[in-house]
Image 1 (cartoon, rainbow, N blue to C red):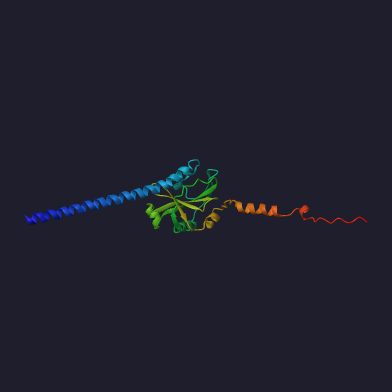
Image 2: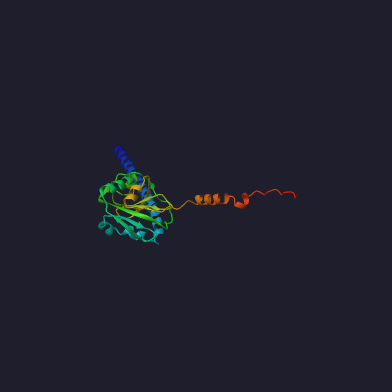
Amino acid sequence: MLFISIKKKTIGLLFAAVILCLVAVIIYTTVRVSYNENKYQSVLAMTQMFDDTHFIAYISNVEAHKEKRNIEVFDIAKGEVIRSEPSNIDIQNEVFNYLKTIKSLYTKVMPFPDKGYVIRVPFDPPMKVDQKLLLDSGIKAVDSVFIILSDKEAPIMLILDSQERPYFYTFNASVQPLLEYVKLKPETEKPQESLDDSEQENTDIPTEIETEEKLPDLPDS
């Protein structure tokens, strides 16, 4: 009878341990799913602000991109591709190195720039990645990278996952070699401070009247 009682207690403890493990797994899964959902919703919220341009139509045209292996420059203001350059292994390696400098997921909601460019660089064949931030987003290989250039923000990298969902990243690399390759010279706005300083310099210049000294009156002879 004592053996049966001990056996029942052991089974009860094992059953309770299994239940606790299942509960822990469910909680972890729920938290993880919620995290991923919030992360995706944050980038989705930003892309929904772009619906007044042709940008989403451009990046979502996956089939067309597979047929076009050239590097393309998309003009945001015009809503069209303005330049196309043949790709090569050197420029692909240059842009692939940008992925190694990714700093963080860009989740700040911002208005889409009124003017700027998007440079699409295809990889043929697709290249595998090992960056943790990309792997955490479910991105194991990339067949295209989009570099977004504006006159208000530092360059931003856009990568689509296997389900064509957009992920935006900040990165720490100079895009000058890429700009030179596609022969692009983005316009930069003159800082307002420089304009104010210039105006101030002009107002500080004395006029001819102000520089004239008043001569003393001469006595009558």
